[in-house]
Length: 166
Image (cartoon, rainbow, N blue to C red; front, side, top):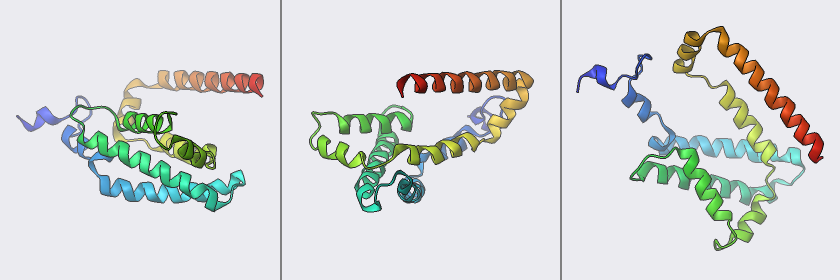
């Protein structure tokens, strides 16, 4: 295979190098970074008003669920994105027939997911790669208009649904 065969089309990035950067391929670094994120989210849980000692078991459970999902994603005989594996593990562990699911759900109830998810989503929204900048330059001004319309529509629809529910 020629070196040019491993390059992603129109991006100039080496596909094998990109594959090595995936979280499930670097479990040690991912575990450490995830632990730091969990500690920050655990402390952010104070915003909800729950004492830190109540949220600790839930945060540990979230950490374990994510690591199990990443391990399965790493060693599974077929490819499925890590977020899908983590979601499947989390769903299965909280199903009523899963042993200990009542305790798991009870511990997770002490974790304010809004306090956990907001910083993660903010980082995910700001974490742009070189490939995304290249794609943005190729699509041009049309992407800006479509993005603004999508963001506005999502915000208005979310506000409307929240108004109906609350």
